[in-house]
Image (cartoon, rainbow, N blue to C red):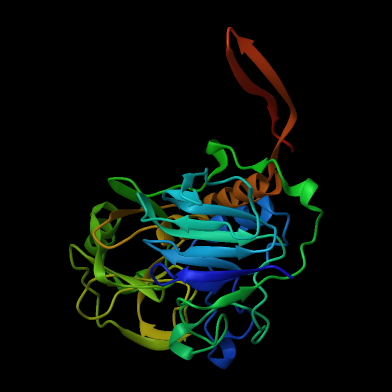
Length: 342
């Protein structure tokens, strides 16, 4: 089977999938991709199942050498991507041949890039997932970050190469990326009653900054402090993805992929599922504001996102090549009809 050798690992590059679900009651964090949308889109491009393992890199991607013929795709944050030093596009299938070197550079917009390969990365399954949880030392490549010299084995592709080539994701269906001040939709609660009206007012209108003390476990925010009605502590309960805890110091913490399973601080709101991917693309010093929506709004947004994902991938078809001679010059041109499936 083909494999990918790691020449340079990039920054905080790990193997991730959809996470280790159903084990939080035993104290096992979910982990998984910070931007699940980009992971699923990448897997759709190479006709993997949603659950296939990919590489997630933060702020700078890896350099990988291909051993064999591999269909790959790069999604997520906008970054320069090259094969053998020549620029190639993100969000479409790349054909890598034996000896080819794939390089993903420093992100230009957004924080995390995803590299999928046909078949997925064949690292050991741990408690139903290949996701890396670095703090616990489980999953991925020996429970750690990918490093130079690693050789990443690949699983058998689920579809013929001919069915994969030509797949792409149009710009309108690519992941959303942060802007000057990113609006993140939330549902208030489950402990919003622990905060007075003026604190809720501030929370819904203030601008917060992602601090340097942020990682896959959670984002600590700087900005206006939120006062509790009484005290910050509650009886510890479960922490959902996107829970926004407010400790005694009054500054919100958004709990993300590697979050602990329970917590004892009041949670003023919860990021809706669809916007977790956008939150996962933020980096330190990015600015965010929170917009309260109803549970019905959150459900509708999720339905719309699932509809988009079901429509992927789109496919380029009907490519025809022509050789045109102008005087002594010979030019090869390709005409390709582009259609969207679904």
